[in-house]
Length: 232
Length: 322
Image 1 (spheres, each protein chain N blue to C red):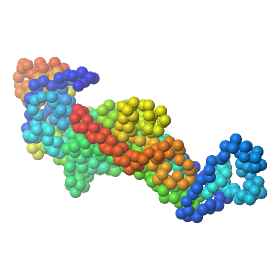
Image 2 (image 1 turned 120 degrees about the vertical axis):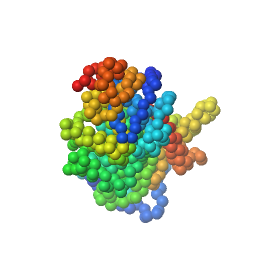
Image 3 (image 1 turned 180 degrees about the horizontal axis):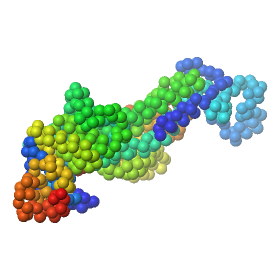
């Protein structure tokens, strides 16, 4: 439903993500990326089709304990400190308190926020909040990491850190789904691309095979969907 | 904002002073009220036949000449800025102030202010950028919403305890009257808030709008007053016997399914032992004159309705798309 009108956001989309794989989900605005993400995370209920999360039906919310999610805009309670926020989200992810006691400082150190651990988030810059959001997504050591426009607001150092973390997840056999509207942001880190256009899956495959055969319909679709950004 | 109101009330309590009063009766001795003054026509006719002279003057010297000893106590407010004669014990003056603080300041102004102030909590909580991360956690949605509701109640309860504790202490220090009955206002007012706030939560889940919650909650509060008052009048007005049975049944049903602020006011009045110091307002007398009135049943029925409203909110929250 959108403004009282029933719209079909996704049509015949069929894709999967394997352990140890980084999949980039691309598409212009209103392509259906957010809807697909919301269905995967249990925020929206699909009107049809079959959706599995970590090989289980999405109705099983317990699998969300093994999913980490970083939203594109952060709206954390501004009065909480960074350490308290990670502790809170860790509890919501059903991580035992004894585990959190060690994991929270380790994550803060990884994100370069150790010296700001006990400061309220209200005093943080946008980049620091983004790094905290990434730490929040990693708090349960998830098997599936979902990153929605993760590069937004990150400085160069933080982007490099994010890329390192994504590589670590891949090597640890974890799946990573990165949602973006700019191919240039994800080209270096993804194994496969999925391009959504007007609710349909327009392309699914590796960037290498796409570039090997630039005359495929995939390229034209990419150009139509993303402009010439992918060539950069 | 609530702390500012509390601070103003505490300063007001610290500005109170009572002097010159004497104990009228010993502890445990029941208090009796003087009958209302006689009608002037009766006095006039009695005076004509028996030459009776009644003086309603409050001058102690005049009264003493007639063999009556009066109390010439005074209560000062605003650090002596306002002086009010106290014709009874100081505990009456203190109970009067406590009644004003509990039912007027906290129970009416404070309750409305808190409802308006907390109306934005759940809509903010349901903002897509905040809710999507929370709802992507394995915790059931109902548990999240209930946790938020209980968290707000705990916060408001804390503010209420601060208000009651500080005003009680301030009045006690200034007047040496330490009546613990005043503390009953904490649970009773918190129950009232919990009942009205459940409706605010339902509005928030359905509309996700702070404005809708603020105005909806105030409207619901006024509606509850109207229904409670209307149902009492429908049962006691002489004309009510001419009302259609369906109207009376509707008034009764509305009474049981909506919050009952007048009942709550009466329960608070009784809990504060105010009846030992003041005459009950007529609407309270009407409520108590009913054989069927039960404070417990009134509170329980309101809490059952609160539970139903919360259950509806949780159902809506669980099935909604975010």
